[in-house]
Length: 289
Image 1 (cartoon, rainbow, N blue to C red):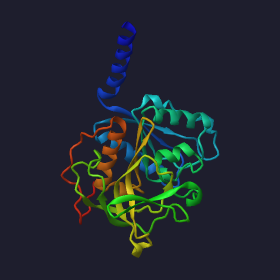
Image 2: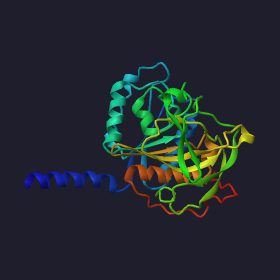
Image 3: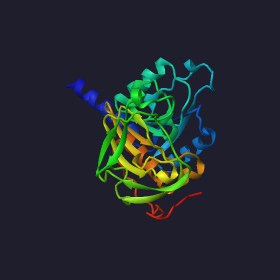
Image 4: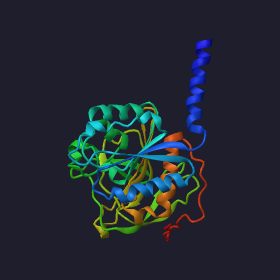
């Protein structure tokens, strides 16, 4: 009985560490084909402005550096956010990250983080679908589409990852039961951004939360492409957002709100944040400078 009581006490203390005050979050950057030195401070501010997180940043070595020196202690954090798209991490770091998420850690894949690690099987399961990085549908997996009221897979041969010119576009909620979009309008206007299309991967244990139409008039696919997704990986929760190419796109209020809500969900499995009054309407962009 004493052993059971001790285990219960340790579990209570572990839960309390995340429940009492802001949760600790880790933001990873250091290499990217996007301007991570500009976007990481914005990600940090957005998450901390929610009042739910204190954010630490772990920056990898530069390209060609000694990646064996990069080995964060993921277990210290309620959620890990990736702003990374670069050279592979060490096997030890990969293994530690897989274990962290599989055992219940939260993970947020932000924009070009879904371009990263095309050869890392477990990472691609975490993000469900990804693009670029020499990914090909024939080997990377299937594409996700939303057709006739449901999510379907598409295994048409071809490359993985594409976007047209940066324009505003509408985002449509597809899973109204997802805590991340609970209370949000069914359709809203997102500020000018890259609308990712044709992402492909294993697409397992994935829920397409929201989509956007990839307009053929803007070099798009004519398909409803996933913009917000949640993925179950072991006991861990993954929030995957394709939005937020750069700082102007990150100022779109829907990006701010869904990132905050997605990170809270990944960390806790719940969302308690209220819907802000300045959330965009179906035909009107809303931004915060």
